[in-house]
Image 1 (tube, rainbow, N blue to C red):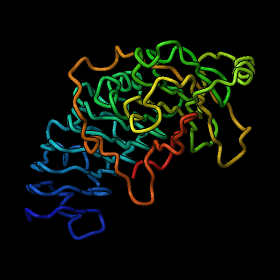
Image 2 (image 1 turned 180 degrees about the vertical axis):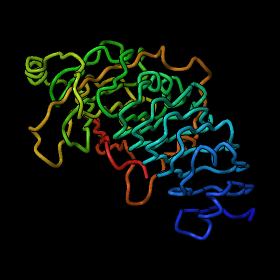
Image 3 (image 1 turned 135 degrees about the vertical axis):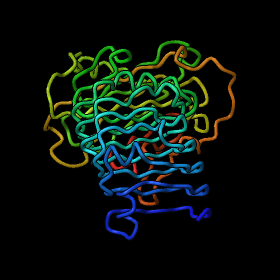
Length: 335
């Protein structure tokens, strides 16, 4: 079975019973493993013996373990992890340093991702419908010290009002925010961070980088925007996104003539006037960028590929000398 690239062991197939008894995998060429709905508990995980040196995708969704420690598993090349509906999972720790994408939606007991300071490729984390995660700020701060800060994106989705307090100093009430670039911004900053806390049912955030500022529109917006305290209520979702200037190097953005960013929440279904929203955009100083010799980054290490019918979270939709439009898809961007 050394040449087997793809293996599914769901509870309804022929391998399901064996998986629930004991996990023994020695498949050097296996790249995708599906162990969803196998009733895997803590005993099965802690007693597992996995030697999967080339595994890149692992689906452990809808299982019943409460702890998941990857130091017990030999998965040196794992990039994509699905833990959706592991509702008993309390702690996720020792993620492989290669990990890029973690989907932990409906993990309603999850309290911690553990120490991810060694996960330099991690850029995409989703914990929708989670209720107990308490280290969202630490999670994002660690991700901003990784490889994505140079030439890629960061996307974090959290339930309720967990926001990166160390990075986002304030929020503004409303569905639109305009950030005016300071002088010499191109040399002093490495990208921009966006934080949205909303009750609205939205699927997109529109990001427009403009070369010319409409002073009248800017004045009107600033008059209407009111700085707000961090909302202390439930039934919200927090979206944090980061766009590096390096990721835009193939667009017209490769010069310093742009002067502002406009960020707006796009409510494509439901009542757009229903619910409250808070939004802010901030430039991220280059002090966050690793002080290392710059090398070309292999984008495949970020594992940003998607299924054919699902588009990536960030897409440059318009690219011209006067403006660049980026669509940030909030939902359905992890397969």
